[in-house]
Image (cartoon, rainbow, N blue to C red; front, side):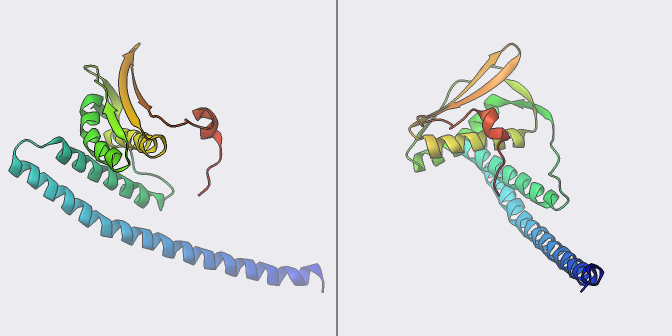
Length: 194
C-alpha cells in the first residue's frame, strides 16, 4: 500500500479523535460550569447567614470575621475555577489593605487549625499603618497557604511577624520544621506536576 493510500485513513482517524476530544472538553467545561453554579448558592447563603448572625449579636467577633473572610476566599476560588474554562483566572481587585486587620481576622481561623494539628500560632504585633495595595482576598490566599504549610509541615510554634522597612511591608512566617529543600526562586522555576 502506498503512503498516499495510508494518509487518508490516518487523517480520518486523526480528525475523528480530535472531534471526540473536543466533545469531551466541552462536556468537562459544562460540568465545571454546573459545579460552580451549584456552589455559589450555598456559599452565598452561608455568607448571608453569617452576616445576619453578626448583626444580631452586635459587633462581630474575630471568629465571625474570619469565617466571613474564608467564605470570600472560597468564592474567589470558585470565580477562578469558572474563569479557568476560558483559560484565565478571576480578576484581582486592588485596594489599600491594612495588614493588621487582615491578620487579626485570619488568625482566628488559623489558630483553630494550628490547635487541631498540635501546633501553636503566634502572631506578632503589627506596626501601625502597615498598608499594602492589592486584592485583600488574594493576599489572604497567599498568607493562608504559607501559614497552612507552616502548620502542616513545620509544626511546633508557628510565628507570623510583620515589619516595615524602607517604605515596604514584609510578612514573615517561621516554624520549627526543616525548611525548604531549595531556595524559593529555585523551587518556583521547577515544573509543577498536576
